[in-house]
Image 1: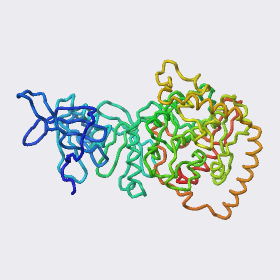
Image 2: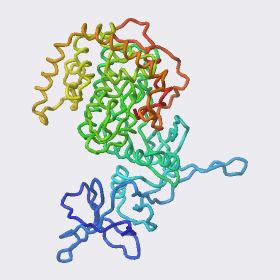
Image 3: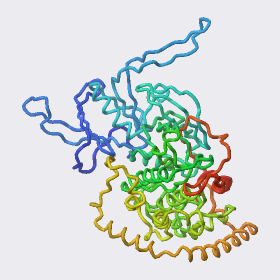
Image 4: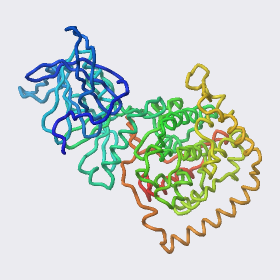
Length: 532
């Protein structure tokens, strides 16, 4: 039977306690007292029994349920806003909202149900309720809530605008999607919903923040944290000499963000130079992971976009998948982060291919260029950590929380930072596993790796050349996911940035441009992200 009201009857026992509870008034012919409990996935409306005529409830019974899902929306009803009118030659040019009116009610809305459910309450409670809903479901009325200044980015399906929320003057990067364009793509609607839901679960200073999502008839607007620094890729295109301390700080921030994700059972699956940004220009302590378009829950199977990522960064267990229902783990992100770490420390790409096919082949075999003199010149502790992050076998690969306990990064952790104190209480075997990983690394003979890699690379280049000539690469394997490219929310434009060089902190000035070359190869073939 199709639901015809905003609230539906509860057909199972509710035993958990609400996160928040409110006493409201229902708007309508009868202004009845209304008790609502707020949970992670729904709201509960309670029947109330009073004792001896007292106003406080004696007993509450869960009565109706409002699902907090993508088809549910809310709208804030306010008193009239204060407007500023600009006049030119006696003609009104337009109106600007100077100040929003006070919240007087909130409407709960469900798609395909004509009649909304309106609630009134005290101002403070209305603000609390609105804040809770804003973290859970989409809000109606974007154009009356923001001042939009200019476009600062664009992609296949979205444009990004610098905008300011009128209510508190908070500046955001608003990512605007056309519903028609996105929903017409294969898994487009499902992918967008997944991205929004994932970002709503995450709250960490090293992860790009989603404030709220707004919706109109034709568009969806994601209110994102405004990141005014460049992508890490842009810094590597410029002649930027990262110090060893800066590299340590960047990696600690990235691994802190990963740890937060992984503890929630979420994997990013598309970590690369373009998806790593900075909140402030030149402040390398403000590093942030962005673009959660391919993120998913580890235990949510089958995964949306099972075999996905970017060649040159993706974990080998993903790029080599044969069974499209085969699960993998969040440690796949550590491999991608290991590639980023390698690039930061050596100033060179981890895979030395000069063509797209060669890079894919090397990535599949996990043939990282450990024989490079630029890697050999790094401290032994660095080599140890990178080697553990870039293990082909995910069972032998170090995890994000374990990497943070590595001696090379421990020295970079701030003692006064509470989160820097990594607790091992949840995993009593953690330290034992780290000792095993360290012993394995001590036995590594990088001279042998050098000989083996040199031979493998020659073979892979020959195979790639033959495949390119014969055009035997399957369409399925290199199928492009036409997702929105990374849109960062940066105020400054980088479209015309000069093609400059990357410098390792362990090399003298002069640098190399292989990273830029390889990234251009990958972008030329894939845009941003491939379903490999």
